[in-house]
Image (cartoon, rainbow, N blue to C red; front, side):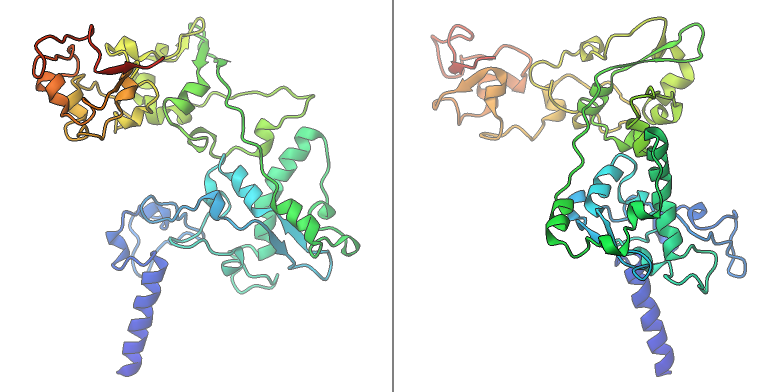
Length: 376
C-alpha cells in the first residue's frame, strides 16, 4: 500500500512540474488537442500521440527575454574529433526574436523552464528512441538551414570546420576571445519607412505598406510578420536584389474583414497615403498622438469606434496630482496644481473651454492663464 502511495505521489509531483507548477488534469488547461494528437478522437488505447508536439501556448509556455539567455555555450560532444564549438547563444537569441523567439530553437519545450537539448535528444548515435534525432542531428537540423541559406546568399561554402574548429585551433579556453564573443550584439535593425509592393492584381497592382507605422503606431513586433524568416532573407548579397513576397497570412489577423470584403483597402493603382486618425472624426493631437493603438483599442483585430468623451476612458484615472497637465500646453501654477479637475472643467467636460467662475469673478480663460504656457 505504501508503494502505491509513493507512486501516486511521484506521479502527482511530476505532473505539477511538467505543467509549470499548475496542478490539475491537462484537459482543464487552455490546450488544443491537435497540438499533441494527430487524430480527432484519441483514446487511452490509441492516443495518436505526435512524435514531437508543439508546446507553444499562451498562458502556459514561459517566455524568456534575451537578457535572461546565457551568453555562451561550449559544445564539446565531439571533442575527440573536433575542438569544442563556441556557440554565441545570446547573440543567436537576439536574432531569433525576428523569427519567433526562444521557441524557434526550443520548439518542443514543455511548459516551464527552458530545458537543454540533451534532455530530449540522446548524445549517442545508437539511441533507444529512433523517432527523435540524436543530439548531433538536432543541433544540425537547427543550424544548417540558416547557415546554408546564408552561404547561398553570399556565395560561400560551409564545412564542418566552420563551426567545429580543428583541435589545434581550440578557442574554448581562451578567455579573451570568449569575452569578445560574449559581448557581441546583433545591431538593432533599422525600421524601413515604406514599401511599395507589386501584386498580380491587375486592376490595382500596388500595395502600399507603411512599415514604420505598423511598428511605432500600431505596436507590432518583428515576429508578428517575420516568423519563419531566416537571416539570408534580409542579409542578401550585394549581387542579389532583395525581394519581398506578399503574404495575406501576415495581414489577415488584423485586416481580415478588409481582405475579405474590400481588396482596394490595401491594393490600388498608385501609392496610398498613410493612416490618418483624423479621418475617423477624431484628431489625436496633442494628447494621444504618441500612444500606441492598444492603449485605447483593446481588441487589435476589430478596431471599433470609441466615444470621444474623455470620461469614457478616464473615469477614475484623473485624480488630483495624477495628471501631467503640461501635455495640454499649460503648466499649472501652485494655486491651481492641487485643485480638482471639475473646478475648472465643469461637469468634467474636457472638450469645452475651462471656466474660472467657480473661484473668480474677474478671470476668464484664455485671457488669464492658470500658470504658464509651454513651448510646443
